[in-house]
Length: 58
Image (tube, rainbow, N blue to C red; front, side):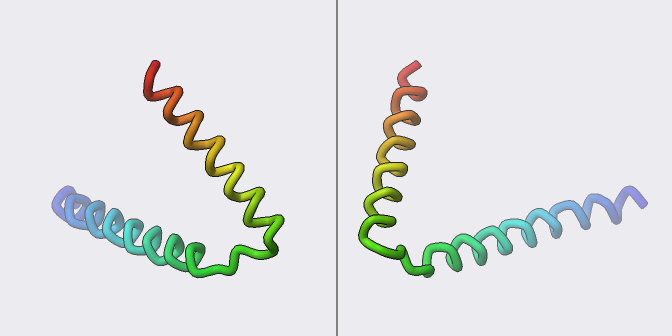
């Protein structure tokens, strides 16, 4: 039983990473939308990066 778990856990970890990569690439391939939506997305991204930089300094 213990040996089975030590094999199953890494397999599920690899499967989770593969699923995450697949979903991430799917999201990246989606259309941005209208110009206004792209502008809003850029503003959100810029704000998130500014927040992370401020957090990193602390």
